[in-house]
Amino acid sequence: MCAEPNDGTLRPRPRLAAFAAVSLWGLSFVATKTALRDVSPVTLIFSRFALGLAVLFTILKLRRQLLTPPPSMWPMLALMGFVGVFVHQMLQAHALKLTTAVRTGWLIGLIPIWSVVLAVIFLGERLGPRLTFGLLLGAIGALLVITRGELSLRVLSLPATRGDLLILASTVNWAIYSVIGRRTLKALGSGRATAFSILAGWAMIVPFFLLSAGWRDYRCLSTTGAISILFLGIGCSGVAYLLWYVALEHLETARVAVFLYVEPLVTVTAALLLLGEPILVTTIVGGLLVLAGVFFVQKNS
Image 1 (cartoon, rainbow, N blue to C red):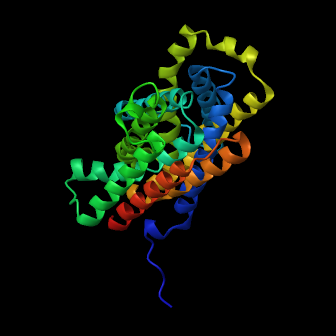
Image 2 (image 1 turned 180 degrees about the vertical axis):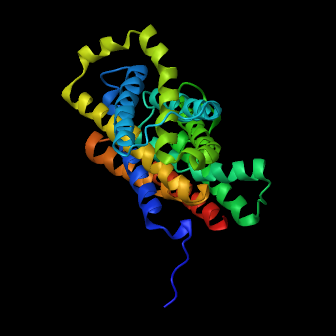
Image 3 (image 1 turned 30 degrees about the vertical axis):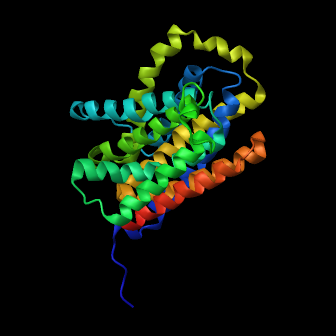
């Protein structure tokens, strides 16, 4: 029997890492909705990434990889932190004050589509008929989710859909985040790149936390809220970010993005069971169209 080639696309660990990361993030929207009942978005982001950094730097310490990156790497690490932590988390935390975890989960399924769009725009890849159809299908599905099936200009007016539009913006942002740091990953490794980029992004949150006296929110923190923040910090901001970058280190961006199929399914199930959020027929139909669109796009990749 011939041995399988040692190719990154055949390695089970990066695929398992991607699957685990998106499963944790699928639950993160429910945990975020729960925590935001007790604390402000800024306090939540500050707290969860402080915990996440503690986890990541402990891992690096145990692996004896806790080495400060060279000065030439810091501009890219700062950009990764700005896009992937500061902007992304600000968008999603404020969005979840205005929309449901269910609609958020479905809309996250658009990220692989944006990844292909970025490849077409910046890498000159050809936009064939199958890929075009997938993009159109995903756009129709997203519109159904955002408008709740009432396709008129009136329902697109702010603030009725502001939360959904913020989530949409975050999907584009995350696609950019997954692309920009590949060279840094190769140079530093997934552990160091993840930890120090998150450190840079968290540092950008600190002034907002101090100016808003965010520590006062802790007085209102319930047991459920505290558990939610611990889960977000340790699981979603520490472990999941590291797992995502492990996958990106070994697999092509499009192949990693395909695992985001799982995230909406996890979110919808968790929101139904834990939050009791209603699921409209249009949400289900729109979400399925989003996933179908993503499927067509990835089949074309």
